[in-house]
Amino acid sequence: MSAVTPEIAADFLIEAQEILDRLGEQLVALEQDVADTAQLNAVFRGFHTLKGGAGFLGITAMVNLCHAAEEALGSVRAGQATLEPHHFDAAQQSLDWLQQMLDAVADGDDPPHAPQSLIDQFDVHAPAAVAVATAAAAKPPSDMIDDDEFEALLDQLHGKGAPTTPAAAPAPAKPAPDLIDDDEFEALLDQLHGAAAPGAITPPAAAGPSPAPAPPAPPAPKPAARPAAARANGEAEQTIRVDTKRLDAIVNLVGELVLSRNRLKTLRARIRDEELDRAVSSLDIATARLQSAVMRTRMQPVGKVFSRFPKVARDVARSLQKEVDLQLVGADTELDRNLVEALADPLVHLVRNAIDHGIELPSLREAGGKPRQGHVRLSAQQEGDYVTIEIRDDGAGIDPERLRAKALEKGLIDPEAAARLTHDECLHLIFLPGFSTKAEVTDISGRGVGMDVVQSRIRELSGQIQIHSELGRGSRIVIRVPLTLAILPTLLVQAGDPVYALPLARVMEVLHAPATSLRWFDGQPVLDRQSTTLPLIELRRWLGTEPISTPLLTIVVLQMGDQRFGLIVDQVRGREEVVIKPLPRAVRGLRGYAGATLIGDGRMALILDVDGLREAGG
Image (cartoon, rainbow, N blue to C red; front, side, top):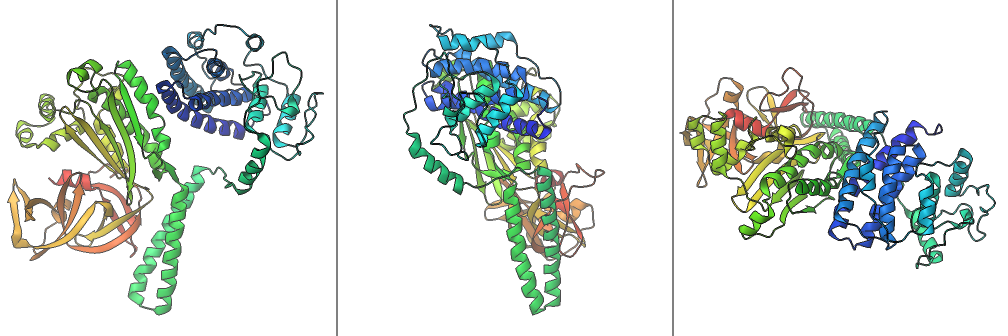
């Protein structure tokens, strides 16, 4: 329609994407329990709403496909048919087509039409043809109402007036500004795109003569529900949509404010003025509160990513003829929106891998004394300033000796280095570029993209990834990422005059040890401590500068996966929250460096990547 503005189209794309994300999960849940009426209604409403919006915008391809799904679901809701496995296959395939249509609309292209064979697959072959179905079939699903009828229906939706048709007299007991209920809204949506939904209620204000028999009234009494709805409307939290670029700009400004606060705190320590001290303390508290409030506006639940995995797991399992149950835990855990979006692709790769490489075929599982159905668990939980995401399966596990042999075969490591690898180090060989245990590239796990890409992506997010596996019992992959990428708590250290920042979440402790207590193993310094051997890296030597002789060493103990190592530094300056700035393109990608920042005394400090530091240092 010519009256559709770009803003309305953009809103539709956002809402349609949210509906599609939910539909994948809802369809899997319905397939597992076809008697779940609430889930059936939710799936029906999803396709119904998509059809209504698409009809309003004139997206015929989407209307036709949603109409086919809606008709099948409507027959099931009416008790005239049951859903079979091929219906669920059609529904899941339709989500892929609908995604393509949305992408095309977003790019300004004509959306592709789904094949007729897919639309025909929705036919539930109802045993009896009723008059209502005959009437609905006679009217094309893409049929549109004219502008005058649309304006009248909009008036109804907003309570501004009544339609101009003779049968559209307002109900006397209903005040004009009152909102219509959900059933009435659904019926009006049907009128907007010219297809009546099974079981929809025609609102009193728009009711007219109809050849179809009126459906029974819902059992819940509406007069009692209206005051509750009115109270809910009065107390509901008001929300608005804000362009993410504006949020990013606010976060950047808060970051600058944090840097200025750090500078003032440094000056306060030098000047030692009581009034300045009080003013800076107040500014410190206000800045911390503002920073927390702004960060919360950018937080989104990881469930936004998790919602797509039931469909992913189902599709992969069916293509591999495996039986898999996917469990989602902690979907309400919140992360910075940029992190939520950036984690989507790595997690899809890991879930695919868990099903493809991990879960065995049902016959093999039975032969090994396991249940036919494999289990994959995707969980998230917050731990301090970090969020831990875990992908666990009860499959065959990873054979470290096979990984060692494969790495030798591909020439990724030399025999001497391979012989020294521990069990855990063998598992981490899968992160080497070009490593794969597959004889041929498939469309299931990675499409030829290795786990090194996943690891690189996690590191770009200032996170870490670990692998644990037990042969025959399954594998566990753990990802830890910060809550936000904008502001990072760090520990500042020095090696000579330059200052460096270490992510505070990776710092276990700071200790001092006599230089005479150092030992050497395989050319690397180590420290025997508490019945364990702590590998050491000297920051000065790592930087390529001349080491200094000192009788007492300052060592920062850092965590890397399940292992710890010590970083020898000249001095520890203390904790400071810093704003992460990307490195210049010329030095971006250097191992051991994660970014740069400005610290309280106005100097620039490089932020060190703990994992890269350990790998590059020995």
